[in-house]
Image (tube, rainbow, N blue to C red):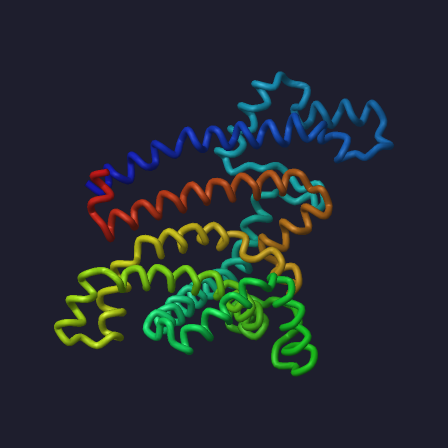
Amino acid sequence: MMLSFLARRTLHAIPTLFGITLLLFVLFHWVGGNPVYRMLGKNASPAEITRVTHQLGLDKPLWHQYLDYVGGLARWEFGRSWETKQRVSQMILDGLGPSMSLAIPAFILSALSALAVALIAALYRNRWQDRVLVVLSVCGMSLSMLAFIIAAQYLFSFRAGWFPISGWEPGLVGIPYLSLPILIWIAASLGASVRFYRAVFIEEIRREYVITARAKGLAWPRVLVRHVLPNAMIPILTQLVMELPMLFTGSLLLENFFGIPGLGNMSVNAINASDLPVIKAMTFIGAVLYIAANIVGDVLYATFDPRVRIS
């Protein structure tokens, strides 16, 4: 049953993926203008323009260019970076490790922290503890990631000297470099997540099964953890699954400001340098990851609630 459900969701994603490739091709090969002029600059000679146009296959019909484009994507071939002259696929593989070393622990810790704080707010709803947590959450939502980065680097790296101000090392040696970016990620994402999870928990608390559990004498902490949390997983999973594609690029600003050589930093540098092959590759992979995240979300929904498979 689950395999057939997964197969149906995967087949439904194929037209969406086709539409994404078509849209990206139109944006980058037609609307965006001739990339040869961007690559060679304004002072390129006609002979150079003709040579590079033929080299990139831009002298072929549009339908032929589109088939070449889709074929390259299927082979994980994104061309070479205009800025570094490296293969884009290899650049992505090189940047994957640094991005994952930041994004995975930050994502897990921020999700667990938000769930814990939201449960506490729901437990003490309409009391001063709840109001304080809600005010702090709103304050956290009002500040941008840039504000968190600048304040944390100044206070904890420059003034206190507790963390390195930038850098990255693989393995356990790199933990001091990643500690402050992970804490910033958690602090910046906590506000919105706590507000959302708190609203979900309070809605579940009002249901009859919670009233029945309380009538049987179960304590509030046990009711929240054993009953409310599992039944609130569908909207919580929706929120978490939509954040999964961010694990690929990590945080653009965090990687850029802390000198982490990950995919986010690579994307920012590519945008600044108008490095079209890298931008195209990251855009396509990001779109595919959102499709995959939706499929993963549907599978998780079906795992927690079998009625989803029937519908």
